[in-house]
Length: 301
Image (tube, rainbow, N blue to C red; front, side):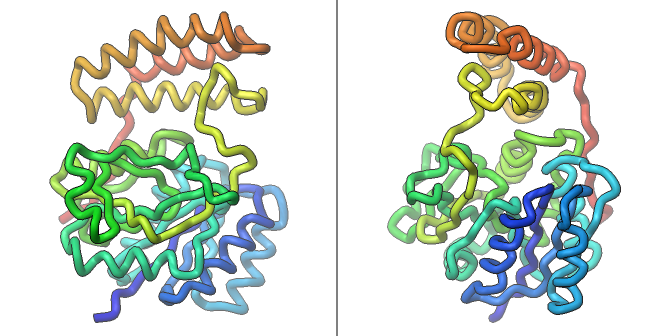
């Protein structure tokens, strides 16, 4: 039976990458139904481009936001549109710098016959040189190799770079936390899903390329882009918030010790510049996390 798939792409001021992403989606060996492009109030020509593309192709549905509410807000909006405006069975979500290979979606869908009641199926995300994308490595479970011979690895959580959700799961667990703004919304959401009794998997032969400039993770100690340092406030705040909700008290205490003591010591010793800014962003974010209680949107059943 043919399954109907929608796509959600979140974009912000990366028009050339968005064009590549859209081309890759439209070239998929498994055709999609609707492509919701959530434009986070881009200041380049994204709005004009999307308006033109929507006239050329009815599958493309631009959603222009009047302010930038971050990746988390974009995915919140996109999944809400999927539930309320579409009748498709599944939604495939990604950032604008995700370039899925031509059969990436087909490979994801092929596994739905193996694990019908799954929480999510994520692609095997690589950098442009085929190395694993460091930022998007999922966390395997203790039973990770239960279905490894079938090309799927069970994971505890995964990133929002090429990941498939069913309508049923979204209706069950609600939407991502839009107040996270950036970083950590994907971990909280996919871990929320697995906590609800659904299993998550990485599909090893569903390949998507993450076209980030450098194949590095998020590390405030060695961060070279000074313009990104203040974003670590969100990373720390959101991590503490997720820890409170999704992890044990022992793990929360362990993380707090690292964030409040070990990481500041590493910043002082190893960071080459902006040490005060790095310390302020990290410590302020960690402390804020304990007082941060965002709302989780749930659908009426």
